[in-house]
Length: 79
Image (tube, rainbow, N blue to C red):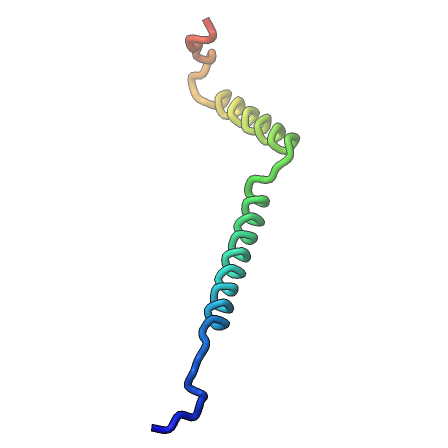
């Protein structure tokens, strides 16, 4: 049995590169998620207020167009 001396393999550098690649992929995924969340949830106070006002206006218009709506119903807070 001849040994050519090239059979010794050190996998530590391979394991390190695989581990580093997994870390890079996880970081990239987190960055993409953060960017999507900034687009989805990142609104200024003025934008939120405008959207709320617009929703209230649409609700009032819809309520006014209902048939038989003579007077808004009074709830327990309105007494």
